[in-house]
Image 1: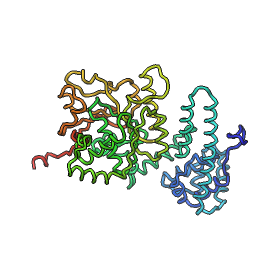
Image 2: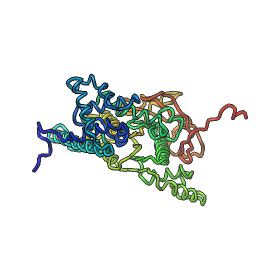
Image 3: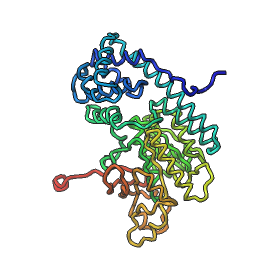
Image 4: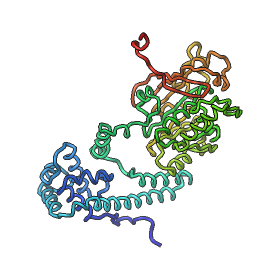
Length: 461
């Protein structure tokens, strides 16, 4: 049986001919650079260090809006340590220019180079997995998650095996990202809109890799806020996965219909719908039938299990979890504080590894109610662990004055047929300012909507 790894000293797979052909095409026809970059080609695909240096020089030249041609590349590489001396640089570039491959096949050559890179990465990853499995320091479940994450990274085109040079990151990632943000299709590259313009302005939308905590006291409207957010995002065609550790899939679906069809939540529970309610129900159910909104009501689910589900579903744009205090780490810990710290750290890693915004609902402590006249929540009110604040990129807190105006307010207080203002407090924002945004809260339909702002001219017209 063949060994599952490359023995020490054996060369990893690569194609010298294909690597040279790619560079030759770029020297002969600068337009080839745009073509292979459009396919996702990256510097790290090359095996030979001198080829990486040449390709980086071409990217630098192109970033200056200069023409990629042999003399410009030689000039850019004069100080490169990858070649013995300037004469060696000139000689090698001339050799590449003399190859004269068909530039029409540039993408094919690039595909061969990428294929060899993928095989090298698989071999290196297999070795890492073998090392983990042979050791005794980790549980099998943790090793399985490690292996699954590594393979997922390869499939997603992410090489996490080594550090990246600043210049490579700049040319491969930052410049294309800024170019996309400045282009006509910039909306595609901004954070996913929450559906509330004022909130999006403050937090720049729901950004990939962000852990967003939504904190509030019980019955303040956390789940309703999350469902409104999920529906807003999914109606725009973004794929949302909603994990609920408290409510069933059916209950969540009913609440979405209630808020979208403007049917009183109590009617959805007792079935006393009027003919107009049924009409609204049918219309909204038909309109929302195909939106990419998914509910998972698995009890006692761990972060690793959530990660596995997100990976397998593919192309998830937003993950929502209701709620933190019901989650378990799946490993033994000395205290609940340590367990919550482990959970929040794993949630942040999930957001980062999968490049998806992860929104987690969280209960606040009772200290808000013992604060005297001002019950507005603060970061210190996050329950059970300071790691929640530490690991979060953004912390949002819900606050309603009317909640405290009625002593002993419970869930039924949210059933009153009225509209109030809910303050969304941005208590932490790693990417921008903190502050607050007001939304309208309709308790009859558990609905959050933006508050229309009118100018002074409109008011006194």
